[in-house]
Amino acid sequence: MALSHSRPAVTSGKPVHAAGAVLWRPGPTGLEVAVIHRPRYDDWSLPKGKVDQGEHTVLTAVREVFEETGRRVVLGRRLPSISYRVLGGTKRVRYWAGRALPESDEDAAFQPNHEVDQIDWLRPQAALDRLTRPLDATVLASFMRARVDTVPIVLLRHGTAEKRGPEYPDDQIRPLAATGHWQSEILSTVLPCFGALQVITSPAVRCVDTVRPFARKQQTIINTEPTLSEEAHAADPAAAASWLRALIRKGEPALVCSHREVLDSMLAAVLDEAAEEQAAPRSMNGRAWSKRQVDRLLGADRSGGRLKPGRAWILHVTPERGEEEAPRLVAVDRLKP
Image (tube, rainbow, N blue to C red; front, side, top):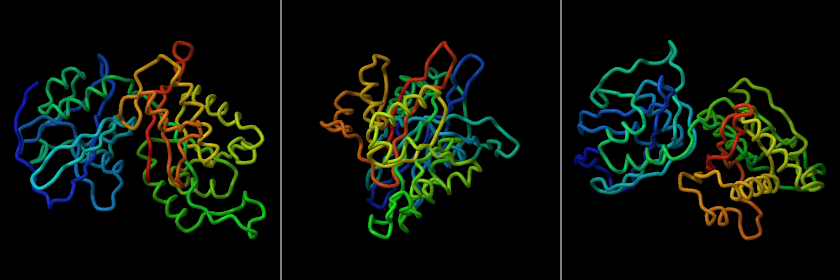
């Protein structure tokens, strides 16, 4: 691996946040990874760039990959973040695995420019040897350690709702508060970064209204599932977990919106089950999976992740491949809109 030094970026003393992706595509002889050459530094690196003010990091990753490579991308599992010193402060870069979508007439063909003058698509080991900086190599090495052809199952807690009270004698009709509506709009811009998702939700108004803006933008229907309601969970706590296992076995991308207790129960059941399997490696929030991490997440009483309103866990599972390979959990990531 070639090593070189670059000129440090100038900062104002505040941490610089950036995001990018290991861009990959199926190739004639197997998976290929994109590496870019930056003439300013005369180095080979992964596509990335600074977060614009007010921009969510997943949006930054998608935007920067497109701007630097001309390829649209669907994000997969989180990869390790890297941090390094720049002039006046620290730069932190978050990465995801990013599947390149098929090129279309609407895509901007890559044009060499002063920031990126060359893109090479290489087999992963060749890309690892080409990268200039060891920190970039650690990100790609993590990418190579586990499956990247995954589909997401997003476990989303509904947005902030109005407080329980006598004005809502039936809790099913309790609506979102103003903050919850704002959260639902933010989610409608962030969730498309993970591709097309079927939408499944608890029948509660606050859950349906949380996914409505996303479903409208994606022009997809909203499916209500009674098993995801608080009432159904109270009557049969194991039913929702069984329902989620069946969804994972299908290996299809989905957005699942429900309530904290229901989602915590589902998450705990799935992670405890995965922890017993020997089908490693897996990752959690971009880090290597460990029993300690799972225990810290679920709590000693196994009550789950305790999601806050409007936040989600993303389960990355392998797609369905008939009888030759059953879908399995590869990674779990947290999403904070």
